[in-house]
Length: 474
Image (tube, rainbow, N blue to C red; front, side, top):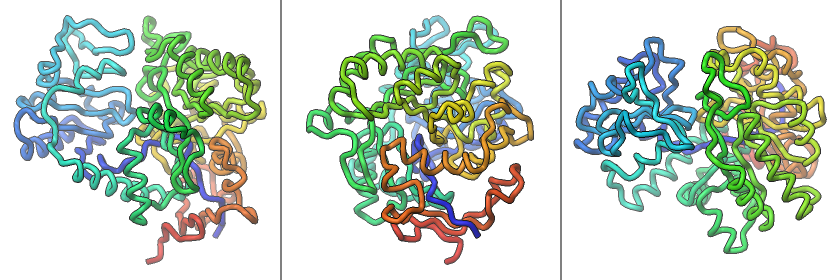
C-alpha cells in the first residue's frame, strides 16, 4: 500500500447529467451509433431533439459518420451527436433544415460547416457555427424543479466517479448558473464528495456586480476564475496554429475570439480581482492571450494574480519564456497522449515535440499542473501519470517522447502543482500538518510498477477532509 496526496484535476467539465440521461455514442461502428439513436427516437415525439454524447470520430472503425447515417434512423427528429471534445457536433438533415442551413451557407469566421466530397453538408459542424441550432426544434419539457433535480443527481453521480479515481479536488472549467446551483444543491444534500473550484462563464457579470470575485466560498465549493474560449480543439484538430495541419495545407485551425475581444475581457476581469482562464491550444492563440496578460500586468501590476492558459497545448521557446516571465499558469492535458494517440498524426512529429509540454514547463521552472478536460479526455489520474511518464498511446506508439517526466514529477503535477493553480497550496496538495486530510491509498507504489502499468494500480481508498469518499471495501 502507498499513500499519496489527493489528486487534483485542474480542468474538467463534470456534470453527470449526460451520463444518466443522454444517449451514449461512445461506440466503435456506425451501426452501433445508429442503434443507440434509434432506441431514443422510439421514445421521443417527432420534432424533438435526440442528443448523443461522448462520440469520438477516430474510434469509429467504419467511419466517418455522415449526416445521412443519422437520417436513416431519425428522418423526423433533429439529431445532435456531440463529440466528446466539445468543439464539433454531427447533425442530421432535419436539424440543418430547421436551422436553415444548406450546402450554400457560408462558414462564419469562428466556425465551419463541413462538406463532403460532393460539396454537400457532411454533418459535422465546428465551433461557433453550432449556435444556429440552439433555438430550433423542440426539447424535453421539464419543469424548473425537474431540471434542478436532474442536475443535482448528475453532480452526485459524477462526484462518485471522480473520487473513485482518486480525485479529491476538481477545477470545473466553465460553469453556468444552473451548474453553480447543482454544486450548491449536491453539497447541501451531502452528495458532493470532491472539492470544487468553479470557473464561471455566464454568471460572471452577475457575480462581479455583486462584489464577488475569485476565492469566494469555502473549501468545498469555491468560485475560481472566469473562463473564455479563444480557439478550437486539440483532439478535434481545430486549434489555431501558425503552421497548417499535416495533409491539410490550407487549414490553420479556428479562432473563436479576436485579439481585441481578448484584451477587453482580460482587462475587465483583472481589474475586478478575478483570476482568468482562457482556453488557448494553438501557438497563435497562446501568443494572443499572453499579449493581453502582459498588457494588464504592466498597466495594473499584481504580485501573484496567477492568470491561466487553459490547455496551452502547442508552445515554443519564446512562448515558454513569456509564460515564465508573467507567472501565468498553463494547464496542459495529461491523459491526451495515451487516450487520443492516433489523432496526433494530424500534427506531425515536429509539433509533437512541443505539445502537452510538461517536460519543457518543468525544466524552465514553470510548475504546470495536469488537466483531463473530461469528457474530452479521461479523468483518471493514474492513466494521466502513465501518459506523461511514457508518452505512449494505448497501442504503445510514442508521441513526443522528449516531453516525458519522471514518476515523482508526475505525482507533483497531480497534487501540489494542481493546488498552486487555484492558489490553495497552503491547504492542499501535500500530506502536511495543518493541511486538509485529502489523500489516496493505492494498492501499489507507482515508483516500483512498470511505467506501462501505472494506470492499472487499484485505488483502495479516497479520503477528502478526513472522510472516506470512496473505498473498495463496503
